[in-house]
Image 1: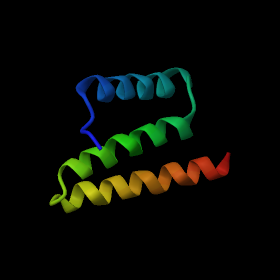
Image 2: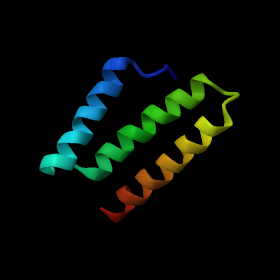
Image 3: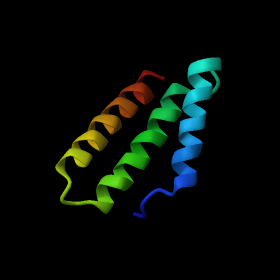
Length: 69
């Protein structure tokens, strides 16, 4: 699992901004992308407990939104 690139993070941030201002996109899809990026960051820093906790929380929320439809 590779660390996310600046381009990937920038694209997510831009899409999150579009969602917040215009309602564009799917909240579940955006949370899933966010969780993926955070999991990749945590995997690249295995000694960082806080990064792992944040990634796990994001994944739980993404899974919750996906289950809701």
